Amino acid sequence: MLGERAAAREIFERLGEHDDPDVRFAAAGRLLELLDGEGDDEAFYDLARRRAADADSPVSGVFGSLLGMLQDSRGETAESLRTLREAAAGGAPIALFTLAQTLVGAGLVEEGRVTYRRVLDAGDPALAARAMLALGRTHHDEDEDLARAWYTRAAESAAAPGADPDAEPADARTGALAAMCLGALAKRNRDFPEALTWYQRVIDAGDAESGLAAAHLGELCYWLGDRDGALRYYELTLGLTEEPALVAEAACRSGEIRYERGDVDAARRLLRAAADSADPSFAPQAGTLLARIARLPGVEH
Image (tube, rainbow, N blue to C red; front, side):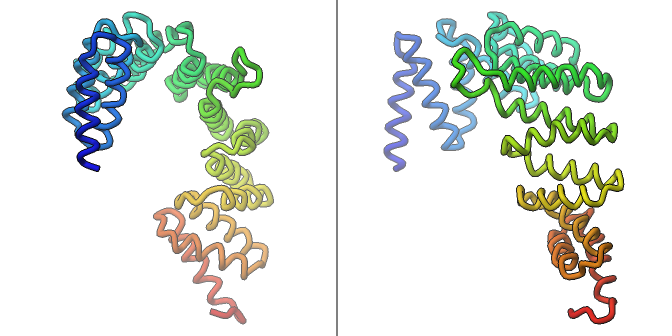
């Protein structure tokens, strides 16, 4: 196996010097996969640096974007931004998006917002939807109305079919994340109908965030004093996810509600699950309720 990888690496390295830029590009992509699998970070970085300097690359900005991200991960912020600005100069969508993301991360939010807006006109629907989502996030804590407008655009754009009506939407994952953000704004305002609209969309889509969406609905119902709703959505959470923190919250609060209603067996089962989770927030609460149940007359231990 080691011999096969070494031989493959030698072939891709040789093809990386080919006269045809398409061959160089393809070989570099395969070699990067190989180096990543081997954990050879320095060789990976060096290859990205050399390919970023290839002026004849058939896909402008790809390796420059990669190099910029690697530089940023190394804490070389100024060098990263210089690399990314060069990569984005040709208007490649991925280069513009990566530059915008890095600018915002570096605290240059206004320049990042301007760059994200350039992505919208760069001809890549999926990246455009992601840029709308990112723009919403830059406004999330300072201008709720503007954040909501961008999130809504992202959700609608991500859900829109492309030229082929039978094709998948541009970016279903981005649409789900935008819906989660819209749900978060509604939850913050204690607006259950609005929160339900967006979180239910995520649940119905079967997205990876569906368990979290159900937990948010459960918590919002709990805050609003709607114990039936809290129980319904927390028990849905338990059926959708095995994420320890979400399971702890859902099991603890479902157990609490079952205990309030006199369903001791169900309460004890749920509370034990929460207590066993060792979650710092909900395990102690569950333990306290379990101790209270244990003191009830006629309860078997």
